[in-house]
Length: 376
Image (spheres, rainbow, N blue to C red):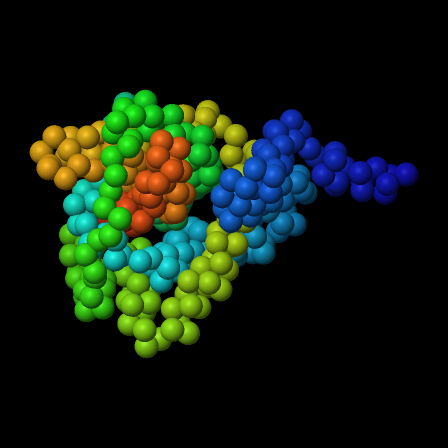
């Protein structure tokens, strides 16, 4: 009987409390949204299952938990805390990105820059609420709506906040269909939403596509050297794609490599939400600030597009400003769908992808700038 009671005391059923059960329910909700609603399943499914696994109570000292040295999960988590997984994801994103639409209409890059205003507004808000400067910078980057970038910067500045910040960033990316459309409709008139973008852009030569990643990495990384771990692999992946001489490498980077990194990134980030570490007042504040950051980033892009239209003869559909956040390709797809509801013949997807691609670059530069300032 004593052995049986000792065994019972070592089970998760005995060690569980309401915090673990609450987080397991959150993980189940994420899995439900991924499978039933198909909200960004590539992100929510591994994160959701990781939350479930990470919140199964265990007997401390056995080397089981993600925060225990020499555990399997701890070794897998090294890819998050070191910034390895985000860099690999950026390599794959570069190999999948087509910059032809952006190069055909360079002014759309301004919308990607404008959408980063959410980052700096949230930085000031977090500082006002009492967050330490490094923590405030880590929270602010959620406004870029870029999960890998948020994880990378947080790993460098405030590794103790990786769990809540990563979950907040990926949650808002997955909830784009719920968050962005009301903001887009609120800030635009129906007449503005009906603005048609040109069906065809000027043709982009292969030479331009080859030169862009080289020029881009030089300009961006000279401006913010701390962005090299993200933008270096990103532009390298794109150069492999456009070179057309290493198709095997480009396809591997854009498929198996990025998929592997996404699996481990999502699963370990989910597992890092261990209830006794994750559930704090600060985590709640991060979620609230993250929603504000994402909303402001969306609004900033839309408003800046409206301002540009004041000075331009050829008007831009303001909906494109919402794609200036770097949630690829979710925000571009949502802009396209909102435009189609107003006019089924107005195709905005390629133009939105141009803003989306510039948003990826913009958020990585912002992360580099914040890292360089906060480490001084």
